[in-house]
Amino acid sequence: MSVARIDTAEQIELLRETNHRIANHLSLLVGMIQTQASAVGRGPEVVSRDHARLLLQEAAGKVVSVSHLHRRLSDQPRKDGIHVCDYLIESTSTLISSLALGPRVGLVQHLSADCIISPEQAQKIGLLVNEIMMNAVKHAHPTGIPVQIAIGCRREANGRFTIEIADDGVGLPEGNDGMTGGGVGFRLIRSLVQSLGAELRIESDSLGLSFAITLPPPLQAVASPLG
Image (cartoon, rainbow, N blue to C red; front, side, top):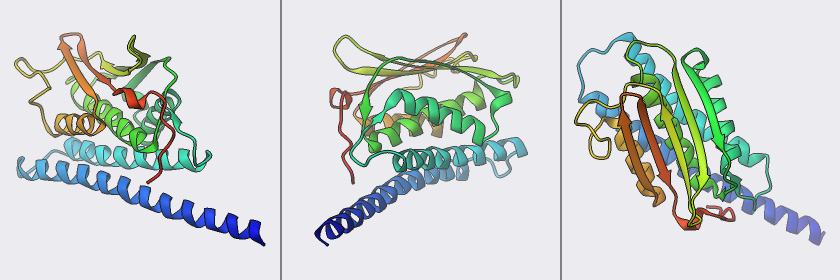
């Protein structure tokens, strides 16, 4: 009987913590979609069919990112963290297949760093990569040709590690450095980087646009805190 009581207590606690985590993740998701909705409200009265389709794809991509994370968490022990490289491979592949982006996106992965992060950190990193990828789909090639996206992850000499996402597009418009300007996508990217306590570097030229996100030392080997 005592074993049964312990198991039941653990199950109740796990359910409580899982529900709390899901609520937090959905709140962040709602905030991001509301930011996009506000930007649309300040835009033109009429938008094209293609623009509306991309807006819906962006919203769907955010839902895909969060749902993939929770599916991943349900398949692993509660105390385990998440290996960021495996997670990025899975989440980017899921995004492309779920939104039928295969004909529009070529993906190259250079993921070598072995780093464990918490579910909360994984959520923000997943949303970051999703936002950068969708930005590349929309803007990298105005002529509509498929965009090639490279994703890398490396450990720095000081123990921190950096995630890099680069496309082969036309880069940012002249005079826009991405660190202060840009549209709603760039504002969401900067906000997520800030919430991670990470450093962001954006480089742009006629051969493409790249983002480098260097995470703080506490993310090197984190046991997964719940809640």
